[in-house]
Length: 142
Length: 142
DNA sequence: TTGGCTGTAACAGAAGCTGTTGCATCGAAC
DNA sequence: GTTCGATGCAACAGCTTCTGTTACAGCCAA
Image (tube, rainbow over the protein chains, first blue to last red):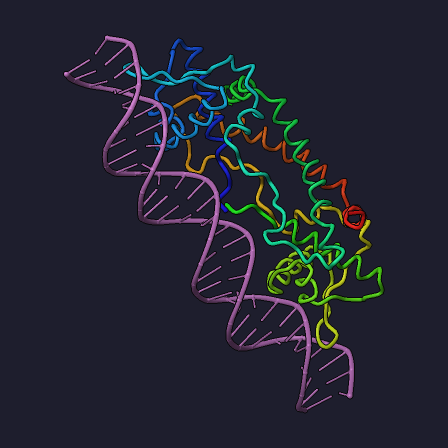
């Protein structure tokens, strides 16, 4: 499968909104964001739509329309973005049910679920410790 | 993309090999493993082939052929399995290069790489702390 | 009323994974 | 040396997901 870049696109858009706001630009259109990400405006509208449903950004319609952050960038974590864009978890269980007459086939799924849950927990903790402001700061250093 | 079940399939196969060995069964054929996983033997041969190249299992050819663990299950970690099957990393960067004339477009990729590296590091640590023996024990409890 | 932008559906193309078939190759058993 | 069962691997189909694109209706400040 193609590597999942949803979190990347959404974070890029949020960092750009944060920087624009700091520069006095109230809102950005999907086209302006798309120009920075270098993709199609519809991709950005889809991504920002996810973030809007999660309450991370706000949208203004009509003339002078565009997008802005709903909170200060210090208070938006990558975990919220991750949940908003609904990226796939890193590991999946069996696609078809294993053979339940085999002791391994019977018990392997709950056992692996426990492992995968632990992995996801530490992953989420790491994402929760990083904010959009952190990302923007690191971005402007480079 | 379809959720990645490579790690699941490989771990299932290894746990089954470990249990069979404990029961006195020297080797298992790909067909026997496939019967437990409930899939096609070729899928299992592909997966066990990855594990063989990583030195985690051994294969015997000719009559009485089949697969066995190359080490005790206590000494095979899920991190080794993860690396062996070459599962995709959880996050990908931009598919096309961002606009380098934008300050965010210019610096976002190294910034996100840093975040993603940290996420992968804790994920790998968690996998390194779990062995095939751990998985088998949890499997037989259920 | 106008004009610019959002919201969303529909579709195409690409990529990856699973599953399947077919066949060459290997090697222990006889 | 022959046999026979299993591996190694290529090729292909089907499915799903993601990205990208076009098209168009809806919204609202000016």
